[in-house]
Image (cartoon, rainbow, N blue to C red):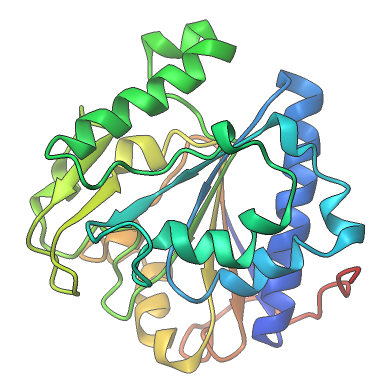
Length: 256
């Protein structure tokens, strides 16, 4: 199921994404004892991550029961500003009481980084849900962004990774966007999620988002079709070229 939520501003999108995180974390812990979330790279989700550090919001999350993964990572040295995990640590993870063992970084320095990360994903899920070892692990929430070319995670238009049906994590060595070497979740893993949230802000994203909403499968983001729900959180600028959508609304202001 796909739902499009329209908001007036990028700040409203960040507020809505933060409350989605909090609500799904509480639901997952209540129902299954753990919250498995995959964070997105890029600049769009950073405002949401910063909101989650506000004391009145952070205290609503059971961080001891939260496990954080990354939907893709750039193969650059640890500490490099291009790393998605470094950005997430700066905006969120250093400011909340999540155990270090619950943050699962991509081992990009290893030649078999994709295989190792897939094994780590499967292993983490199997500890708390043994039945998941027999199928594809189901994240409770996957945050994703949208590139100008319609890419999401590090799945790019025309790349052979879009046709993968078995592997959950792949290495990409010819990304059209630098750096060229990356590790990414594949569509089978993304589409197994209970909830996928695509965060899109800014007028420059409007052409790509319009094509995604028109189901143009030449764009990787248009191939998001999770077993659970896909919610697209977008501001009015990003939706400016899309038609027949709900009127923008303001989200409830985040507690700060």
